[in-house]
Length: 304
Image (cartoon, rainbow, N blue to C red):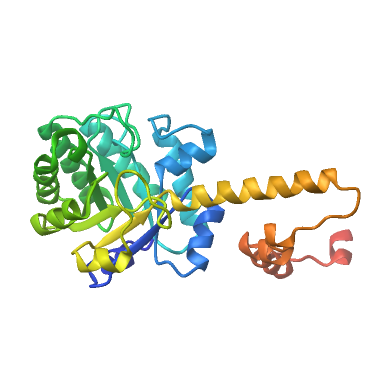
C-alpha cells in the first residue's frame, strides 16, 4: 500500500535511491512522469511555497497530513513525508506517525531538533537531549508496528553542526537500534564526513541531503549520486531543487509578461510555458474526460 514495499525494496537494492523534493500535486506528478521512483515531501518546500515563509517551524501536523493525502491520491510513486520534530514529545510523535500513515505516507521522517525547528542548513538550531531523541524514534517505531507495519521510519539528527560528528554518529546508531529504517545526519560539511558516517553507521539505510542537486550551497558539498552510492550512501534527497526551479521559472515568465504588456504588437514567448495539451495531460484532464464519457446520460432520457 502507498508504495511502501517498493520503497523498502529500492532502499535495499545496490543502486542509490533518488528522491527529488515535492511540495504540491504538480511537482509530485512531474517527478513521477520523469521516471523517478519516489518523491520527498519537503517541509521547507511546503513552508516556502504555501506560506512564503522560511523553514522555521510554521507548519503543523494538519498542514502536512492534508497535503500528504492529496499527493498519495495524485501519484502512484511512494512519498516520503517530512514531519519535522514530530510536532511534540514522544507521545506527539506516536500520533503524528499514525496520522501520516493514514494519509498515505510511504515513509515518515522525524528529527531531533528543539522546537521551533529550522532548516538544517540555517544557523541557530539546537537539538534535544540524546535520550529524548531516541525515545521519539522508539515512539515512531511503536506507532508504525501497531498501526502500519509496512511504513518506513526515517530518523534525522542535526547534531553534527551543534554537538559534533561523533555525537551525530552516536545518535544515528541509536536511531537504527530504536527501529529506524533510514537514518540521516543533515548538514554534513565535507565529503570525508559523509564517508566517515557511512563507514561508522549500519543497521539502517543511510540518506543524505544534496539540496538543489544542480547548484552548490555553502554547507554540504554537491556530490554526484553515483559517487555517493560508491561511498556507501543508500538514498539521496534533493528537497530544494523543484521549489528553486519553479521560482526561477516564474521569475522568467513574469519578466516575459512584463515585456508583452509593454509591447504594442502581439508578443509570444512559447518556451516560457508548457503548451495547453501538455498541461491538461499533467493535471489529469484526459482521465476526467474518460469518466465523463463513461457515465454520460442521454439528453432525451434526462428529459423524461
